[in-house]
Length: 190
Image (cartoon, rainbow, N blue to C red; front, side, top):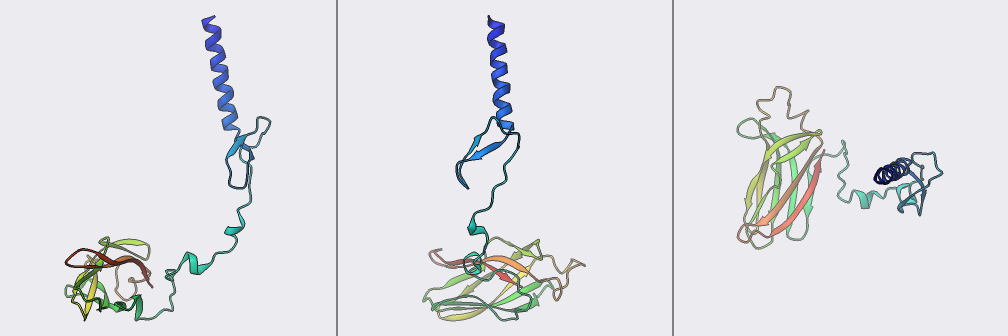
């Protein structure tokens, strides 16, 4: 009797696995849960994507215009409101020969701020590069900040004029005294 029970349990387990491997034969809705169809021989039933995938509203998907635009020229406004204005004004090299992006930052908030990169890295032409930038910006003042791409001076394959393109990085500005974040944004510099 014990062997018969074991044999029945094994047969039940195999039948359950077979139904699971057969895939989904019916769906309760376009995006609903899958229900197994014991009579189906198809592994997966193809469904049509919802109508919302047919058209992409660029203003919703890419509100800051992060898609590459090779025609865009410097200066590039990155952050602007009544209190802060951040502009990327061009490409250069720092004092040690590493590639750099030059920013001007205007602080009209009434408190001293710190402007910089968030992550200590940026994507340049799809490649991760170490970066560094921390620039204090006094209340009511304008400052120049340089985002340095660390180690590019020693890289024989890196040319500041040709290889410093299609850059994605996180920048932020925060109050020096309290640490309160004024803004934090992912920006794209073609």
